[in-house]
Image 1 (cartoon, rainbow, N blue to C red):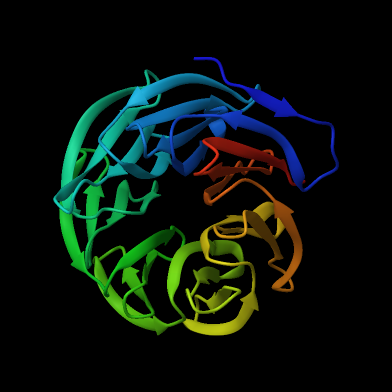
Image 2: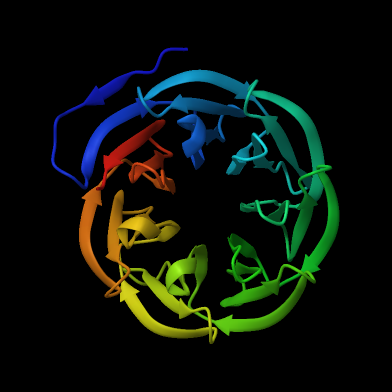
Length: 309
C-alpha cells in the first residue's frame, strides 16, 4: 500500500505532512526504536504501519472488528490493539512488530477501550466496562482483573512510581492503581474525564474532561505525589486523547469537535498554542526521540504529522 502525502516546509508546531490511512483511524502509538507508528482503523478492522522517516504506510495488518487503542512495547517487539463489537467481550490483538503479524488474540472484558504498557514490569493494562484487564506481556495472558469506577476510558502508566491512572467517565473520577499489587489505592475527583497521560519526571498527570453542554473542555493537572488537582486549564471542545513529550516539557491535547490540538507548556501549565489538524481528531502520540507528533483524524481517514521541536 502506498500512502498519499501532502507536505510543506513549515516552522515548528505546524502540520508538515498528512498521511492517508484506513477507514476511521482512532488510536496511534509510536515505536521510536524501529522508526514506526501504528494506527488503528476502526472502520475496516486494520492497523496501518507507518514508516516515520518517510511518512508512508509500509504495511496493513488485519485485526479484530472495530479496533480502538494501540500501545507498543518496543523492547519486546510487540503491539497491543483493543477491539470491541456489539457489547460482547472484547479482544486484544497481539502483534509481532518485526513481522507485522497477529500472533495471539486475548479475550478481555466488555467494551475494551484504552491500553497502556508498563515495559519494565512486563505488563499491559486494558480498560473495560468497569474493570481493567491486566496482561502479562511475557506470556500474553490475562493475569488479573481490577474493579475501577464507572465507564473507564483512558489509562496511563508511571513506571517509576509503579502506578497506573484510569479515567472513569461515568463518575468523574480517576482511579489510582498500585501496579505491584493491582489494587486501587486512591480515587481523585475530576470533571468528565476521558484521556490521561503522565509526565513521570515532573510527577504530573494530565486528564482531559469534556461536557456536551459546555463549549470548551478542560485539562486537570494532577500532582501524582499527592494525588490532588493543582490546576485546571481550558482547551478546545471535546478534548479526548493527550500525550506528553517530557524532553520538550510539552503536552498535546486533541480537541475532537474543533479539529484542533492544544499545546501545553508543562513547566508553567499554560496553553501556549492551538494547531489546526483534521476533522474529528481522535488519537495522539509523540516520538520521544524526534519530538514529532502524530494525530489521527477519524472523519478524514488521515494522520497529521506535526514537527513540534
